[in-house]
Image (cartoon, rainbow, N blue to C red):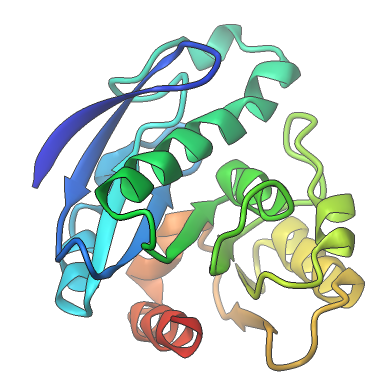
Length: 213
């Protein structure tokens, strides 16, 4: 694992952990949820590497070792997490301009990942516990306009807001059945915590990623 620092286009410092596989391998940007950090993926990233992916876990702004204090953020700053994602994608592209990039986001970062799809071509997006509106980050319009990037939507039945949100986003998506999928697990885990309560989710995601890479 390599600790790195990224600079976003709005000149913010973003800390990240890079887990390399091979410069010719596929890439995954891993983004955590509110009040967590890049270390949420410490036990998962090596498994993605074993599966043949370069994994880059970032501290989104206001969290961990990155710039800012989330307690002082406006809704606009939460929307700027999309710049953190862009910087992470650019880091992997600098390793190999032809690298295929996937995004895995949790909660508010899932919303930003879904909004990122129309901006830059990524291969697929896995959205863990997205919502229709987290701090003004609203992904619904982006999902409606995304006719090319496959999306896997994940929530738990007891996390009712996310469950209802993924159901709505899945319905709104114009993607074909083979390019969009919704998975709802039992329990009430949210975001990256779903990995702890549903061990099969990791295998599900790896299967999904390989389908499109």
